[in-house]
Length: 208
Image (tube, rainbow, N blue to C red; front, side, top):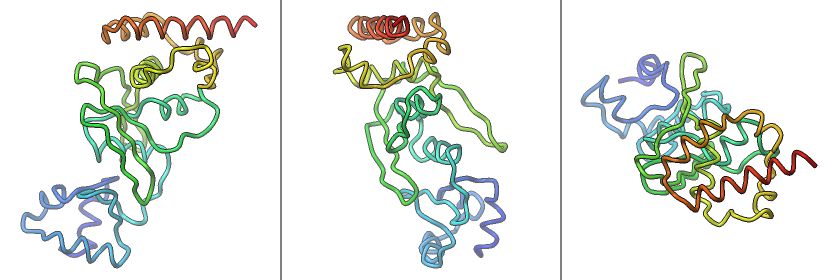
């Protein structure tokens, strides 16, 4: 297979794997990938996953890549809160929830971080479509629950304040019924107590 044939066959792929190529050409040898990297045609993201070097990177593309290179996963935690304009500054690294073990990848295009949640908690994400492609990202309700679930030390008002969440926007956008329905699935009394304290903190702050 020549590079131009690969580019044509995978033109609709944001990120592709060796397996994707071997579905097209069964006897493809991975040394060709090394040759194409050396020539600057493709970039390796992590072992087994590549992008074309001329791929234009933006938030949507990076989110889709994050979903693909460590599946199953969805964007959550700080990155999702930033996506919904609930925290003021950009987040270092793209944070995701996954049923696989906690892992971080430093790649040529971004740092991707994954934190473990139990399989029964893998829900509450939306599928966002863009340019005939898509990525999975936690709803606001699930993103905040995931954050508190992983960060068990966040429990005091000073901790809540340090999150710098836009309380007014948060309270306007969340569906409290959905939040509590999701919260019940965690089945953790301490988490429920912390979330309720957080909501009280935001409500009190809004009244000031």
